[in-house]
Amino acid sequence: MAKHTLQQIYLSDADKQRERFEKAKEKFEKIFGTKPERFFSASGRSEVGGNHTDHNCGRVLACAVSLDVIACVTPRDDGIVRVKSEGFPEDEINIAEDAPVAKEEGSSAALIRGVAAALRRMGYKAGGFNAYTTSSVLKGSGISSSAAFEVLIGNIFSGLYNGGEIDAVKIAMASQTAENEFFGKPSGLMDQMASSVGGFITIDFKDLKDPVIKAIDFDFEKAGHSLCIVDTKGSHADLTPEYAAIPAEMKSVAEFFAKDHLRELDKNVILKNYEALRRRCGDRAVLRALHFFDDNDRVVRQAQALENGDFDTFLKLINESGYSSYCYLQNIYASSSPREQGMSLGLYTAKSVLGDRGACRVHGGGFAGTIQAFVPNDLLDEFISAQENLFGEGACFVLSIRPVGGTEVELT
Image (cartoon, rainbow, N blue to C red):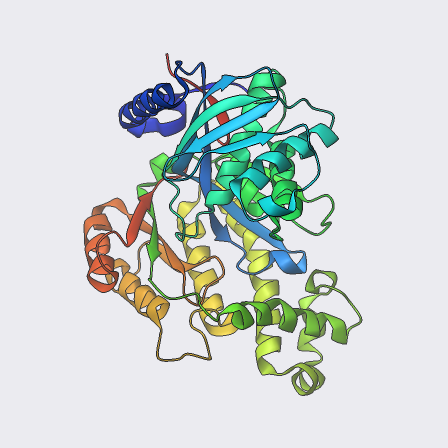
């Protein structure tokens, strides 16, 4: 893990971010009484392709984004980790204990302990440090603040105690372990991997024990578009059955053919067994299975388009994914609450501004969350105004693709 400069990480936003680090340094000194010695950063992430494909061993396309969590750090020699995160109580953890602690479940302390323990299992070192962190990865924006924090902690351990030699994939895997085993939240590897690696990546979950990760070399800064995430302000209360029904229905189609996951099948076998599948599983399950196969294949074509510098084709595929999610996956609004269709209104409003340019789609799990749009820069002001007229000021987050993942930061 090489150090990166502010310019390499934040591009045109480097000067603003320098001010942010300077303020964080002042906070660190007030809390700990000394100046920080090292600086680290890890980004949020955005799912770009493969909507609800990962849980059936499919492919996803994801990217690191410009919102991040940063840390000012000084090492300690007593095995104690003290982390004060802006707006939260301070954590103090003796990381000598490698097992999950029941009272820490669901807390940032669990993530810190979990990352340390997971890295030790891999044969790396973990030691104490003091840290002050501040985050621009807003909770509820679908950008995964927990993964960014986990990857940040992994990079601190790598930089302070392993010469920066722990690679991004291993840090992501340690972060997932922390979230699954210590924090108590089952999650895949997409969030942590996108945050850790940076830029655009594809992940193929065909082998869940050994997912294949590929970085894609594409300069988003030259594409003339901004990445926007819009919070449609819907309530996630009582939506668990809606989310749970998607993998359950997809897997019911796989089970019809005595398979565990749709990835083990070919779409043609679905097309040849429509009548029996409709009777056994229902039409919605069949439609969701067809979405899986199409969106899974789309990820490959999206990655190829980016690698070939064909941004127009990439945008076309983003729109196709959005259409498929709307019509076939059916995760744009909850069938149990048809009066609330904020995402549908957000997508209609996006299309009204974009016309035949740019692209938009559901972002993440769906039903009541966020939408994603790639907006031509000359339409950006109009797009923001239209979305915030609908959902309120601050609902539209304008991001950029971050080329660097989790890293130590060189401020000089």
